Image (cartoon, rainbow, N blue to C red; front, top):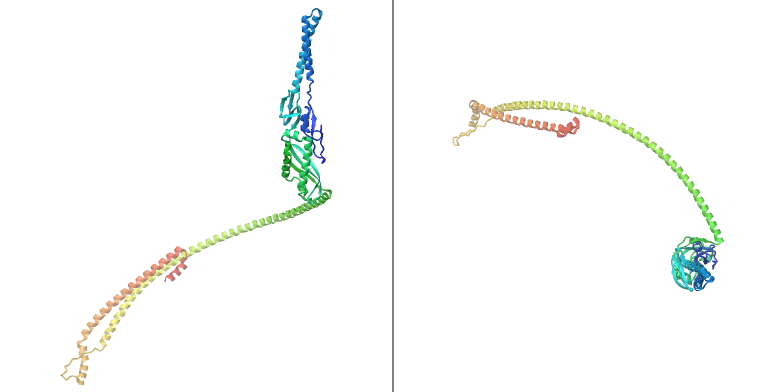
Length: 491
């Protein structure tokens, strides 16, 4: 059994020598805290089974000789050889059978599931056998190694004194990875488990030191749980030639130097005090907020009570306003009825007054016609009197050569002319005056009739306009006052 030692105090990878019965326990559980991915099984077959075979062949040959001696011998010796031949033959056959069974049982090899067996012949690699039962009939064929190829093997490698970017050595960086053996033949014959432990430890330390050189000391804790896919790729590139694949890795812990740990402790204490102060302030703020919320709720309740009072007052005011409007509407209805009644009474009075005016106008028209007739008659009388008293010119025609143009003849003619006119012209004058009076009466009567017709027409037009205006006024509901105003505007 070979062992390896990891100077960082992490995981150890080694090979173990074991029997076939303990092989599964070593591959799954390790050996004394070490990882055992490869086990060298003990080959207990040997050639001891040939002793039984040779003994059996000897016994069979002895039985044959005894049978020949018994056949060709005589007497007591022949009987003895014949009696011993049968048991000797049986013992020989049983020895040969037991030797063959021992050989068959020693040739059986069972490989666990998830493992590979490295088969050699005379110490030379021949093939890789998979899980299951195999038969090694050749006595110099053997399974030198059994390799675990299905388990993801965990490996922890703490790296000490890793310098940061400021060249400050960190106390330790713990690196955790999982690997799996992909090619068992290449892994066993190229490097082996113990050498792989050294190579893997060196590769991990190199990768961790490269990563620590990239960070500052104060931010070294950021390495915990950081993305290390680049480191996994780097390790896979280095270990792929050994038939190993890194399936996962991370940095679970980083330990700073004592000085920085004290500094971080101070920072954590300050941070805790800050958190405590923030919590205290948060409690104070919540208390103040609760107080303000209670005040707000109290104000809301007061406001709601006032709103209820205002709504009650508003409802009462609406009720009063509705009652007042109803009273006013009743009063307006009463006033409207009064106005309509008064309007109807005024309308009836106006109609009566219009009828009286119409009758008065008719009487006035008749009186006016009588007066005009009397006036015309008096004018005729006055005209007749004036015509009777008015001087009438008289044309006296005389001959030019008679000599009657003297002053004396003119004077005598002037004295005799009134007498002639009084005596001879009285009847003609009266007849002319009567015809003139008749004509004047006819003309006066016609003018009086025309004036009466014109006045009747104007009275009818005024009455129709007044009836139309009063009807429109009542349709609009303005009452008698409005109708009077409209009547005035119509006039």
